[in-house]
Image (tube, helix red, strand yellow):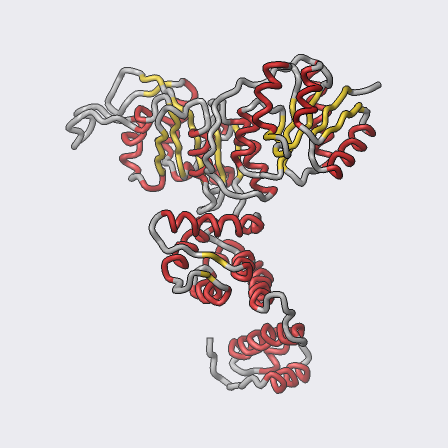
Length: 482
């Protein structure tokens, strides 16, 4: 028994062939085309139970065709695929009423799973979403699989008022996500109000959030509107929510439960007409275990969690980010700069403890200080060597930083040689660069006692003596150099 007929549109013959074969094996009938005109004719003729379509084809933009499909066949679900893997593609697909958005290259099992769900939903009479306005701005940058997951969650949240919890390391762009949820959501005509919990004194935080009445406390000479009132009909972004003191946590919980609050010193309840988006770089579950964060408040805030990946988990986005930051710097008045592929390779080899913010600051610095119009690998190497990031990396990764440091060094080494391979003997050179400081520091720690050093290193004493001689390591008895 057939699951239904899939109308497949993609101008890539290989993709059409692969998907046709897979869908047929899954029990679907398939009609495939490389033209939107043909797809539209089939829709008008009442054919098909599901559309799977690429976005860009020679004869048009599939997202522009979706509103017409929805008006003609509102019950017909559409799965959109695109190699233009930006947050705006995901947002446009959701706004146009797509059943699902899948970035290319796609996972075949994932495509088949969504096809089965869409055909099942259609048979149950599921209705498509309403069509809001389109906006071409680009609030987030990145096409990596990690960011695609973020985009897809965001696209589903745009036209809801669900409370969102954004978790990510410092510098990953949590406020950008919050602003995008606001700017492309149903509350976009209202204000976006951001407040950093860590930046407000504990004794003022309740007044800051909820406002106060005249005479409520010493110094309250006038009534003051709090952030909840300022964000009415819009979005309130509570950054670093893990730093909120317990008494303020209690009041916030009551607002989320009851939907209203009172000002400090006030008695009249005020309706809280805001969408809450919270963010933190901390592990709130760990804070709950330590008694520093209310568990009931966590569940009220963590309705829809979004995890922002650190930059080291999306290094394939670094070229797009670096060039975008250079363009942004130029728009702000700094000299126009290009960057070489070798320099990009060096950037991709870093750990970036400061994440996207650290990369942006580096690109601004290079745009301002680089004398040439093109930023090459040597300039980047010099700036990277000067950046004070090692302590942050050690604090984050503990004892696991040696291999990543070596990898980063080797990436730079290969990048500096460009297309040509490094000279022979690389293995011995790397071993020497690691072995020499290891033995030297161990001898320093044991005050030149080679027997203790050999035992500490797990080496035979004669082997250690040979390595000391081969590496020309000076030995000073009785003196600790570290």
